[in-house]
Image 1 (tube, rainbow, N blue to C red):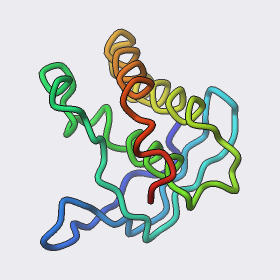
Image 2: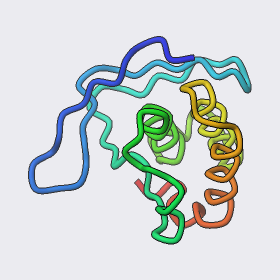
Image 3: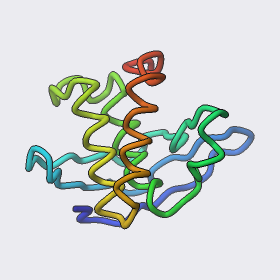
Image 4: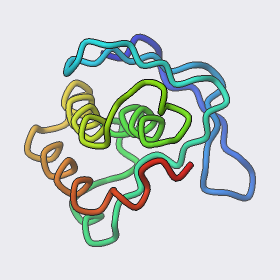
Length: 123
C-alpha cells in the first residue's frame, strides 16, 4: 500500500525523473516499509520493445510501483536486503494493489525475471 503519492520533476534533456518528495510503500508481500528517498532518479518502467504491445509503461498502475522497483534494483537500496526476485514480486503486487489485472502484473513479473538481470544494481 502506498502511504504517499508520487511527486516527481522531469530532468531536462533526459528520459529520467527526480523524486521531489519521498515515496513510501508498505509491502503486502513482506509487510515492510520501503522509503524511496527524495532525490532518487528513476526512468519508471524500462519495458522491452517486444512487451510494449501489452504493457503501457506510462500507465497509472505501473508508475509508482516502477519507482519502488527501480529503487530496489539500485545499489542505493542494497542495505535493505531485498534480492532481485523479491523486488520483482513487490512490483507485481504493487501493480495489482494499484488496480492492474493480475494476469498483466504476472506477465510483467515474468518479463522482469527473463530480462531484468542486466539492470539489477547498476545504478
